[in-house]
Amino acid sequence: MSNRRDFLKTTTFSSFFLFLSQYQKGCFKDSSGIFPLVISTWGANQKANAEAWKILSNGGRAVDAVEKGVQIPEADPLDQSVGYGGLPDRDGRVTLDACIMDENANCGSVMFLEGVKHPIQVARKVMEKTPHIHLAGEGALQFALENGFKVENLLTAASEKTWQEWLKHSQYDPMTIPKLLEKQSKRGQQDNHDTIGMLAIDTNGNLSGACTTSGMAFKMRGRVGDSPIIGAGLFVDNEIGAATASGVGEEILRICGSHTVVELMRQGLHPLEACKKAVERIVNKRTNAVKDLQVGFIAVNKKGEYGGYSLQTDFSYAIQTKDGSKIINTESKFN
Image (cartoon, rainbow, N blue to C red; front, side):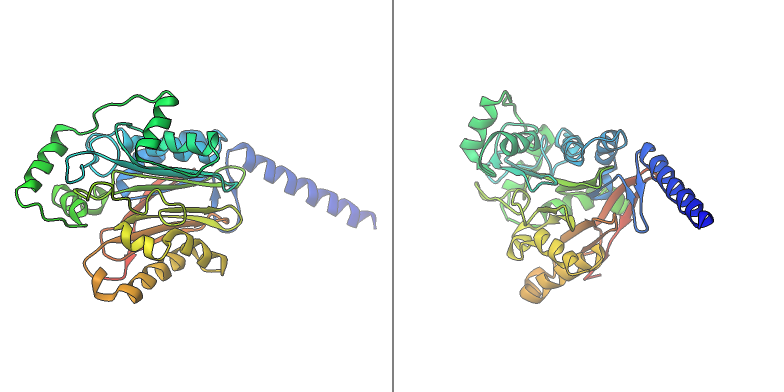
């Protein structure tokens, strides 16, 4: 009897110290994944992940990490799909959309916002300081100004030049940004990018996400896509997992894309399979209408398993854990 009691004591203490050593290193590993981790759409967003990782690796909250991480492309004038330097609408005006969601289903969003470089910061203020989830247009700008944000010109010379070139024919193409970036890219998928969606799990195993974009290039004034819509461009359920999207927002909106991916994970599907099923749902509903369009999903579940899938090739995502950073090129429906 005493030998059995001693064995149980030894086993209990060993398990406790193993857990403690893992926790003190800033990560908790189970049979499926490693915490913390951060994942974002497009391989070019490794820099954004690195910024988020500074918070996660020091035991910070996932929501703080994703807010900080996506500000990297928001402030990058060379990124013409997000924030400062984003391609304008057909009237030559840069309008921005963003949303954020934490582990407690708190969320905030701004859309059709002009003149504020970091819409994700405004979205977080909406989440924390108002009874609402979405603020749009002039109301979103008024709220931003009341909370200390400054208005600045977000249209760079490069983006204005691209717009001026577009005006010569004025033909709208929802794939303008992917085609432009593919043309500019020198390293294929590694340089390609679009809207950034970012998901993270912190050391406590809590999930959060953020999504930010300048939307479709040369869109009609007032157009809003999936990115700032909770359940479309982003969704987080702390019991199950989180998902985010990039691509043609109208197609993502039709199936409430990110919510669909999370619900598929709730049914037991691996994140990759859940993303694949969501893409297949788009194809089944829209058939030939989407054969030349791009939509990509990424997702992570509560275990730390992750994956992504897209309509077309050339979609990638970046992942960072304590083991380092890497880029993964997703499988696609069409080749």
